[in-house]
Image 1: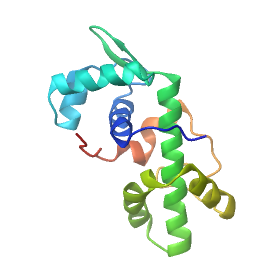
Image 2 (image 1 turned 30 degrees about the vertical axis):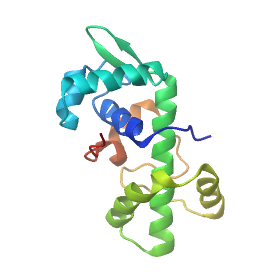
Image 3 (image 1 turned 45 degrees about the vertical axis):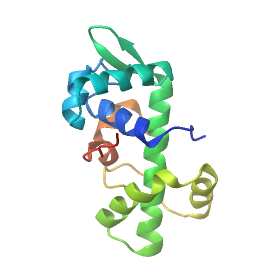
Image 4 (image 1 turned 180 degrees about the horizontal axis):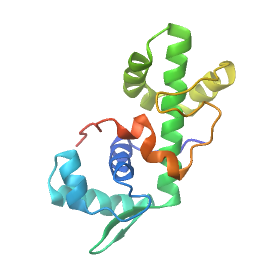
Length: 156
């Protein structure tokens, strides 16, 4: 099941995961530096994400991603990989091209479309981050995924 969310929320969660915010609280200064925004802007967004249940904001420590936040990120990773592999296998794009295009289009794909692609694809290959299409994404593997590692987009 894919959770309804905004692309802006996803970008912030990616930044926080990239800094291991699923293991330890990440402060607004760290997020601000990574996203090239003000500390106040990062703090405000982290408080908003906390109210939405994506994490807990711990005063003096920072933001720690909750299970809802982890589930959201894992679903986005899976969605990106499904589209990426579809582009590789059906349109013969290179791994780099398919990844780049997936970044652009996967966020707009509906849950129904993703499920159709997944059901109608006989894809069993490695992603650029060495996961397999049938492999369960664990918390341990999150920072290793190329979708997390790539430079996050600045969305205000």
